[in-house]
Figure 1 (cartoon, rainbow over the protein chains, first blue to last red):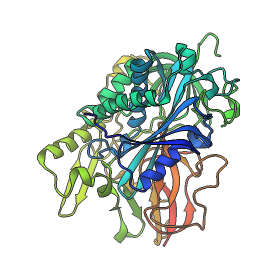
Figure 2 (spheres, chains in turn green, cyan):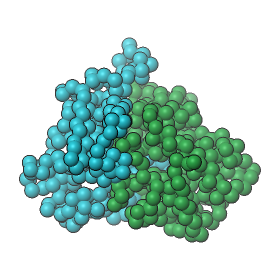
Figure 3 (cartoon, chains in turn green, cyan):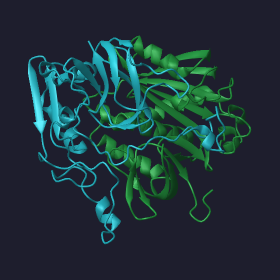
Figure 4 (cartoon, rainbow over the protein chains, first blue to last red):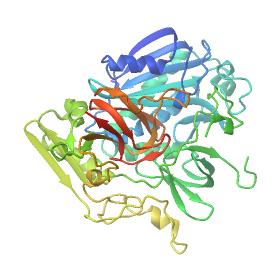
Length: 255
Length: 234
């Protein structure tokens, strides 16, 4: 028995699965409601950026969650994106025999290139706060613009074409396990430990942090108990990163 | 900063890299947090720290009473996250749990480790086990949310505060219109802003109705728990 009961709503074409899932949640959709589309005509990334979503080239899905707030405090909702990244990581191993890396906090990489993006959003609904977890996985290289050097697809990584619904099912099953962990005793601690074990970004990774008004480089030193990334700067200061862009770098040849 | 600053990630195609440059919210450790609760304050004393939302979302799990098992879960949650103050109010009962010292300092800046101190020992500092502030649990003074200076002294102005720590956005995207402007009329369910916390975009509803009179925070700035965001005229 899965920790979540999934209800799958399949569309041929939608502007955005996250927007549709939000609408469903506002109208009272239950936890586990999952919206999937063959294509998105206005697929979204963070802050209104576009997620290119041509028909059949990617998995475009959004999941409605209603975390039990007695177990996961409102301020801990960012843990949902860590759990989602772990879920996709597990699913790709199970369904495609693919070992992926997780870039802080929630991008899936293969061979240093982005394979999957996750957009987490929370909204207020009459039934309480709902979280929408949007997952976009590049199934083929048509999913992204050809001039994107840092993107890849399941097809490029494995040489096989995978069915979107098969991958969706694997993602939901794997996510349900990670989501259940989050609701149990020491759920956050265990989730962050699992994330750290799955991500090369957790420890000793040279990174560049790009903030709104500042860029600095340093070496990652694990996660804080709330999921913030610890970065030791070249000057030996420890900084906690909760925003901004994290990029892997080499110190001798900084990209 | 924008996508254009990142040559590997051409504009309007984020499949390669959807992360972007945000203001930092570094070194802003957990403020006084309330499990699921959300505190509003107004300068009007009769209206002070009224709690509104806390009961709704978790009503399914806690209901109108709490048994010992659930209370244990709550206590565990609190100690795990270093809350200094937790209050849960339901019809017919109320529980308040407090810990920590009254005058512990909160440090907003990045932590500079003394050169003589090995990094490892700092990392090993217990996150929540002691009331004394360690680098990972700067314990704020109890009631820091209500003690946050309110930038306006107009007694009739109601303040919408930030329910979480994160980065404040006035619009859904850099090219969208802001959710609200000065003079906007709002209802309880009007979305007034987005606050991003570790890549999770949180839509923030007004929870009060009236007219936006003041906007206290600039777009893309980091905000603290309980920090005033908007002043609303009834």
